[in-house]
Image (cartoon, rainbow, N blue to C red; front, top):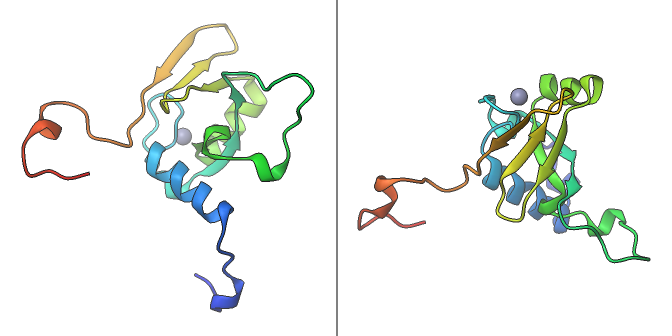
Length: 122
Ligand SMILES: [Zn+2]
């Protein structure tokens, strides 16, 4: 993928991308199963507003500001006006253009009985 190692840029950006992909696993649009590594990372509105007088900068962008969206749903979001909201636990709440709400649970960890068996490590 990279032509030379000198083109890779270690640092927060790489860590942020890795954290988002690990958390989302797939496109976060309701019902979409496109793998996160094939998605765009899109900015979301924070569920907790910033303190008055502070402004976001690129250096502030973290996993809590980004969701995985496949190209198709990225376009759908922008053109149709779907609004995502990312909660601190990784759940994405979507509001449709008609005001209906959809919840997309975090998929970064297996949920259910299989994760309770002994011998399974994170
Ligand atoms: Zn999608």
